[in-house]
Image (tube, rainbow, N blue to C red; front, side, top):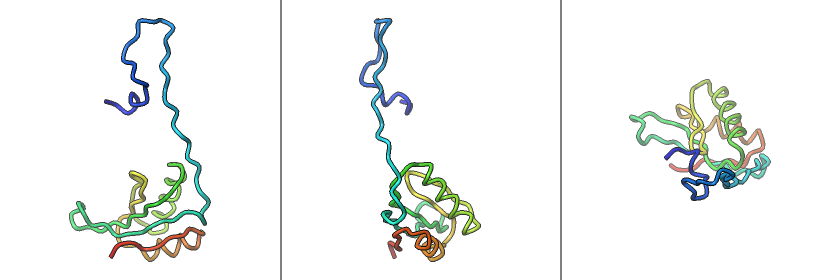
Length: 114
């Protein structure tokens, strides 16, 4: 089933010509200010052929704001990366550099994991 059909409220077919689907409203998430964000930075090597990825999780806000933060961190480190499933993934081991930059921007961030 495609994602666009998941918000329909149980009706599959109707013979009523005036029927309109009632879509469930998605809650809009406001982005918290930087000083209220609690971000965790950890190193991930699982399912990546042994290559390290710096992952940042815990961001509360819109996907657009998360994409902007991810883009800024990729530019800072000079490497590629992606924003997937609410996490920012930066190729390589840049936890210290990312941590210093996030603290400078006013985020509450810390290293997690080993």
